[in-house]
Length: 375
Image 1 (cartoon, rainbow, N blue to C red):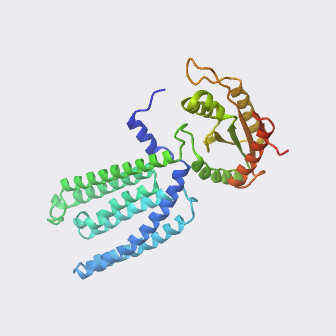
Image 2 (image 1 turned 60 degrees about the vertical axis):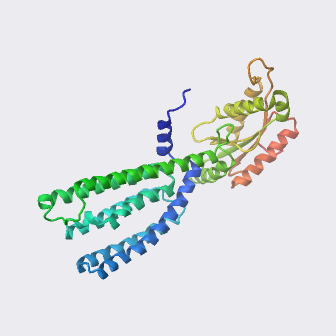
Image 3 (image 1 turned 90 degrees about the horizontal axis):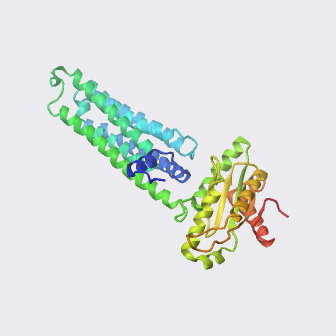
């Protein structure tokens, strides 16, 4: 199998659906963004007052004050929704769209009074950059592209409309207003901010991906599993379905290491991970939680899960493992304990405890077997 090209891998990471750990961080990031937005909205109230003290037109000050009040009210609504952890999957896109559209709306209202004011207001325009930068806290490259693209499209449409409607492209626009070339530069800055933020998001995604993956086998690790299981339990409870976990421990693995060495032992662990992973279906997972311990998360009743795991156990034991060419084969086998949600436990710790109890029973009664019921 060919290694994917770097650009293809970057795009797949940025625009792929975030995994469970990333979604959890994104939900926390959305709450943080909501708090920052609420604080910035309070500061926005200062802008029209400062403009009034600077001698700005009264009607523009009143419009700015009205917009600032509206922005503060909406910011409080977003903050209340963000406190409901991960319930509203659409919330980051809705708030991102609001941040951009609100900025465009303020610039458009300024342009109604003076066609050049909307293009001349650098302070308001900078809120585009703030909105794009804040998407980094949600840890989702798709959101960054969405918000950045919306900012570019909306500001290009606004600038194009103002410049095309202004008589002679100068009579209604102040001399200090940005020119067409300067509008292009601003659009370029928005694109650069989107690219920079996407790079930050990609770096964060890679770091989280590495922290949630086992370095030797590439399968999820304990931290990822403990984040994922509660969500699977919630879904199973809503749908009235069953989740079965299998706690797998490789038998006599210290002997295997002594026989084929550490490098051969690492190859054996990877071989077992590939063997167990081959039995997984859609929305089923394999995690490595210890040196020779794995957890299978299967979306089926415990009886069906036992049949699948036991078939995998017999298949592994029947095929001696060659760590490399020219070496003596070694026999690999595992013991397993199974537990089902919600019958054997309603939490990850309770379910893992039930599975471990049955795993220990399998090891006490001769190993190389799977047990799904308490004796």
